[in-house]
Image (cartoon, rainbow, N blue to C red; front, side):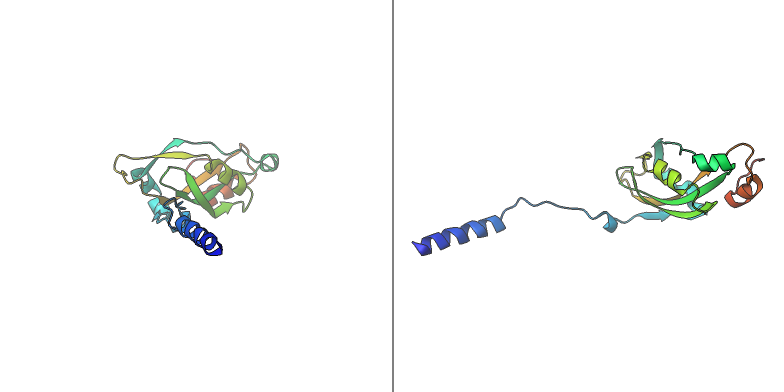
Amino acid sequence: MRNAVSITIISLFLGACASNDTVQVVDESLIEYKDISLKEQRELVKEYWIVEKRLDPKYPIEAARKGLSGCVDLIVGINKDGKTSGYKVKESYPKGVFDYHAAASLKSWRWSATEVNVDKTPVLTSIQLDFMVSGAKNAKEAKNKCGWNYKV
């Protein structure tokens, strides 16, 4: 009787091990992204992805009170689903003032693949978000640091 119970338990165990019901988990850190994050490559993203949904960042209240303008340059991952898959602040001026609000807005951006991007190639790209308030106390310095080409 003991042998029959042991054999039954072993059979059930081996049967469970041979089951075909497997779950595949994709580690997104292993996905290869095409790196087009250099400033001079910034426009290349348009060959792969088109912005479908863009949410402008909120202006930090404290920065507005202090009369600060600036920018945040982020390296952003766009995954195969057209969603932001991560970011890194490359540069910002004034440092740290607008970073959180820039990143928060990018998380809700959505892209659609271009006609030539049939494989929906994930990319790393550089996106600069500008924050401007009229009468900014740091207008000239912000223009120089952020590379703005218009009169402040």
